Image 1: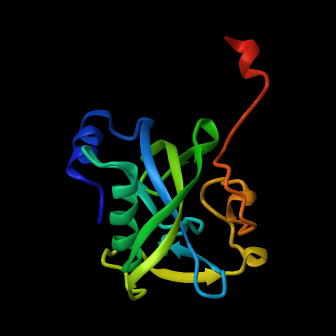
Image 2: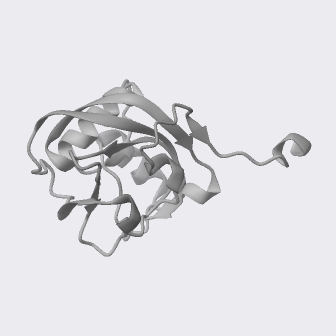
Image 3: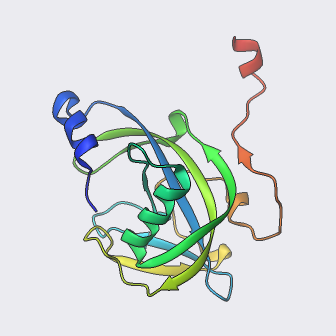
Length: 165
């Protein structure tokens, strides 16, 4: 699905200025443990199935919606892998819209569905082995893609932050 009415209304007011955007992303694996990525076919780098959290949505609900729209799969989030944001997660879309994502990344279990996007944004869906992952649009730490069983949620940390405030 393209931009929601909520974000469209904001964009009409602020144009291409930087917006803070709470969002979700899902790590979906096939039976071989390969990770699903999507390509929008517009020159952007590959990405996880992901998107903005809409007003009134819980992050897990937004994840189910976004994965369904972009992949055709119905998933259940099984655990929170990490929360990422800040200036490293700023992105400029081909149309000039600037965003700074605050991303909740979930591990997902596929319940049903077929790889067949419901939206017109996804040009290609492909599973990749961890070792062969494509260049991504956002700088997620490689460790979140590992299936080593680490149950700790991850986040960015810099010791300098405690001295800054």
